[in-house]
Image (cartoon, rainbow, N blue to C red; front, side):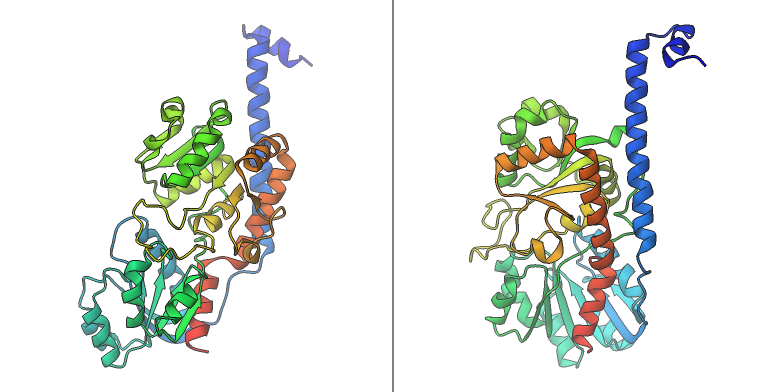
Length: 375
């Protein structure tokens, strides 16, 4: 049997260069095969998400604004379709009161609620319709939601620290309900080599994130990296890293999932509560809860390195299902460690996938919401 060197020499190839390419290709293929094979086993091992369809009629009012809200609307409606007997979806620009009187819903549920007018909510409640709101951006737009929340019977917020904030306004029914993953979009899948990276970060360049990436620049410079989002040209080291940055590009959820799947490590650095970039949080309500990307990254069976949030260990087990950091030095050390320890990296990523699919889907969240309103 000929060796690989002999095959390459017969083909006129350079053994050293082609062998190196073969080894890299074999290594990548083996790693991906392992990840996808075990991901499939993890997903198959979990019981199918089933819950008895409730005899409820829901009128769901979408956020009515651009990205990223249409993807959130889709995730919510997909979940509701499997949970209630009848669902009608409307945009806030429609005559919601007329639709409600025709449809006679048990609940009018709105996402975000910024576009839906106060007079509409008053007319709905005056007509006897039960209303609920799920706030998507707390605490960053509490200057707006402070006047929106009292219009609704039930308030759900993804930020635990905003529960007391809304109750102090006189709202009686206020609940913490984190966002989740839409497994139809964020799931393990094979991606092309062009989408594969060592390190990935997708999100807007808020100032604390700019500082983070500037500090990481020396190690990012020598790695295969993708940074994508608005305003990354604010970095001091932007010129140095510009070939790794997709500037001003808001990715679709599908493209985001592709890059998450292709990354060995995805960094999740939460937005600061008092960042002055498109922020309406003059009361400086501190953010304690995780962002939606926390669930989406783990839903792709990729190792997530996240800065520590107060609520994190209520959702994932750090070091087992997710990895966290409390300083720049700790993040740099963990990037170096997990890029060199593939089995540990994949073990945590697979545990994170299992926890996400088990506990953190929109099906689970909407089930919780409906049980809260209709015990």
